[in-house]
Length: 123
Image (tube, rainbow, N blue to C red; front, top):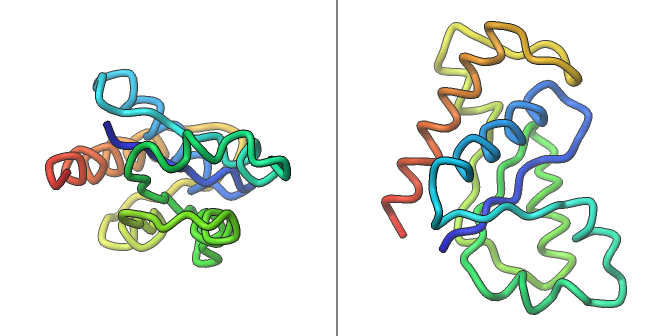
């Protein structure tokens, strides 16, 4: 299995990353997703065993790289990183609302799901 760690931030690309992870997970039994809110709030280390069980790919919505930073603070080395904002720079679509997906944002989700599927093939 592979674990996706999507952005939980308040950016439009954060929403794109969460929806893309959900779509990919629903279509692939070898994928799990990690809640970054739970991960960052887990000061007792209850999630540590699960976080070390599978390779984790971080999906950052913006250039701040928060997913990688949170995982690094937990002592977790990621197996890969997908910068959603950078992937989408190569396309003529963009997400604009951090709370709702319009037709253009749904296209962004499809693009990111494609990136996730390519990444799965490398594991």
